[in-house]
Length: 309
Image (cartoon, rainbow, N blue to C red; front, side):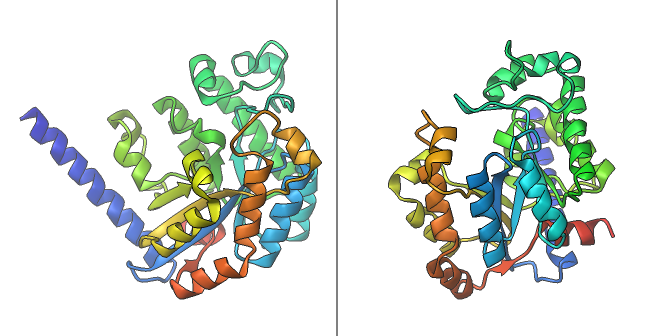
């Protein structure tokens, strides 16, 4: 009986999420079987190279969304672009970690207000595991609000929120709830996929309400994909895209001295990886695949406008 109850709950959850997904497509004016894609550049603000490559890719059109790391040193450059181009789809890459070995940043909130989020040098913690073990939920919320309010003060009007390294998704249901609540409060969609919820515990599922936007898929290249060849991975991904809303997460930068220094010591997600992302998503080959596969490009701004109208 207990196993039957759990099975029933899982089935009901899948049905409910399916109905949510269909409503996004219909709200956007597409049939339920349409392939809807957001090509989403992460990490704006982390470095000039990241900004320069990402902004060019956004201007060229195939990359149609990006998100900003507010605690990072090069965020003002992105804010200038956001003020000059308020039509561009820019969200916030809510940042509670600092993963690079020799390139560091701290919180936007006062360090004495968020001591559980920083190391002995005052920088954010290096990974989601350490963050999850140490973070006090109230302090994490304080820092997230500081990042959001700073964005508004700088003239950035975020179209969505997502989580750097996924740290708000993979630690506790309480942190996940803060993430969702901020989206509801600011009327900004937060990036949560149906696939994530299928694997999540009931404690996470209980935090979802009808106000929350649930997309079909969030896809990103893994280290194994990088080793096998990024162009091959992206070509296969686009040629086999499923129906519904998919977010394809990429990282765009130039393989130059600045980005090599930022990512020194990291085999993956480094300067060479980011150059390959830029090369593919500004290529004629990418544009041709999108056309051949009848993939419809949508943005978080469009979802935000129809969801919170």
